[in-house]
Each structure stands twice: as C-alpha cells, then as structure tokens.
Amino acid sequence: MELICPAGTPAAFREAVDAGADAVYCGFNDETNARNFPGLNFSREELRNSIAYARQKGVQTLVALNTFMRAGSEALWYQRAADAVALGVDALIVADFGLMAHVAETYPEQRLHASVQASASNVEAIRFLVTAFGVKRVVLPRTLTIPDIARIARKIDCEIEVFVFGGLCVMAEGRCSLSSYATGKSPNMNGVCSPATHVRYRQDGGELVSELGDYTINRFPPGEAAGYPTLCKGRFEVGDSHGYAFEDPVSLDIMDHIDALREAGVSALKVEGRQRGKAYVAEVVSTLRRSLTAQGAERQALLSKLRHLSEGQKTTSGAYEKRWR
Image 1 (tube, rainbow, N blue to C red):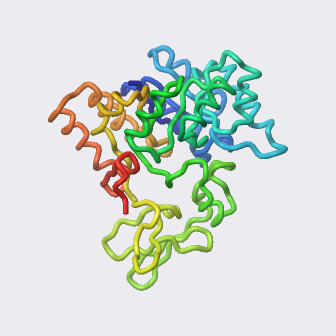
Image 2: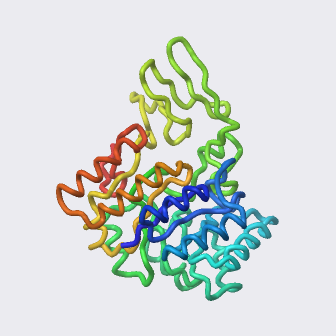
Image 3: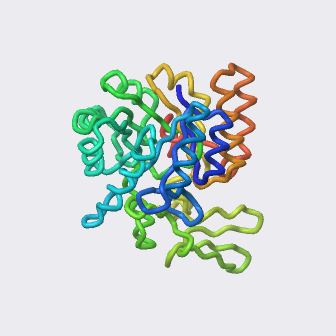
C-alpha cells in the first residue's frame, strides 16, 4: 500500500519525500485548496521546484483542488487545473463534479482522484465518478467501517485511499456547514475552517473561554489544555449531557488495522496534516514508513511513539470501528 503524506509548505514537502512518502499531496495558496490559510501552500514556482525534487527521488506529487467552485468564478479553478497539469503533477485530487468534468474533457490523459470532499461513500456513487469522469482513485470519507470498505472494494473498478492518521473531520466530509454558519467563510468553498480572524480567547473567572465569531466554543478550567476553537470540537449541552457532541479533540490512528485494510482492498494510506510543521511531518512519515513493514511488538513500539504528536495526546479509530456513543 502506498503512503500518501501531507505538505503545507515546500519545507514540509521535502521532509515528507526524505522520510519515505510514496506520494505527497499539497495545494495552491488560494481558495481552490481546502486548507487555505495564511503562510501555507504553494505558489506556481514553489510547486514546480517541489515536483522536480520529488521526481528525483521517485516520489509522486498530488495536487488538491478540493473545494467547490462558485458560480461565476470557475475560471480560478480551471486555471489552477491548467497550472497543475502544465507542471506535470501525477494526479489531481478533485471534489467538484463540474471541475472533474472539465479536467476529464480538457486533459483526458491527466490522472484524476476523487477527493474525500466528494463524499463518495457507496458503490453507486463511486461507479458514477469512474464512468463519468474516469476517476482512477477515490478517497473514502471517514464514515465507513473496514467491512464496509471491503464490500465496496469488491464491486468497484478503481483504487481506494483511506485516512489512517491525523485530524478528524466531522462525520461527512464535503458538508462542513458549522464553521460557515459561525463565520460566513466556508471550508468547502473558501477552504477556510475556523479562520484565525474569527478566533478569540478570553478569561472568565478562572476559566479560559474560546470563541469563534459570536459563539462560545469551549471553556477550559485551570490546567486543561486549550484546543483551537472549531465548532465540531466544541463542548455542547445536549439534553442532560454536557460534552463533545460531534467529535472529541483527539486524532485518528488506525495503523493497528493496516493488515485488515490491506485485506479489504485498500491501495493507499493517507496522513492528514497540511497545517502541521515540517518536524511533525518528518517524524510521522518516517515512523509510519517503518511500521508498514514491521510486525507485532516492533510495530506497536513504533506506533506508540506517535501518540505524543496526536491532538490531546489521544487517538481514536473513529468510524472505522463505530464505537462512539
């Protein structure tokens, strides 16, 4: 199985390549990219240089055009597709069906992957993407169990990629309306989840309060680490309960299940983390690279090293095992 690794900067890109990635995914520094934050992502020239470096090492470059086009503004997405093709990327990771159609018609030789943002989570949806646009790989949403993945793999004619380590998104990718509601900026269309311009922290008595826009997201008592305020990781009152209603502030880690994923028909394992620094990328990628061939106690020892890099220093198998309340 291929190891697909993140890069939010040229420095992180080189670290991923040197640490053993089979492919590195990245994006342009604009709203065609679902990680559209200041200081992250690639200019055209930076991407050109990164592709050349990866190619020298036998590593592929995947470019994410994984937001949805706005009516009347399609030209930006079309231009970035043209730029990526001209620079020689190995695959485009696309969410919008209109952009998939444009790429398939304009650049029929360009390899096309369906982004997790396309939310293709059943056989019929994946078959449509393959037939209509020639999609070669689908990145499955983090909503499926491993038996679900195995059933899908037996009935489709394209490769499967799944997330195995890093941040979690709320249940159904491609439908991130919570942040849009609070900030007016859409993760799916503008590429901005919980933009820093809308984030505030304040003291209230002995507690640290985190806010996003006009909304209180969380309250942290003394001694509790304060997370970044995203709505899906906020604490809510639901009925008689008080806690994390959507998603706990922990990281995904299903590397314990890599043998089962291989048997299920998965072609590629994806690491989330384009907002992370180069040191994180280097350590995570090199450790996962070694764990893919390690067995038993050696693999467990390698994977345990990653826990301190996880959000809240805790991990979950998420929907892959469906144990949540």
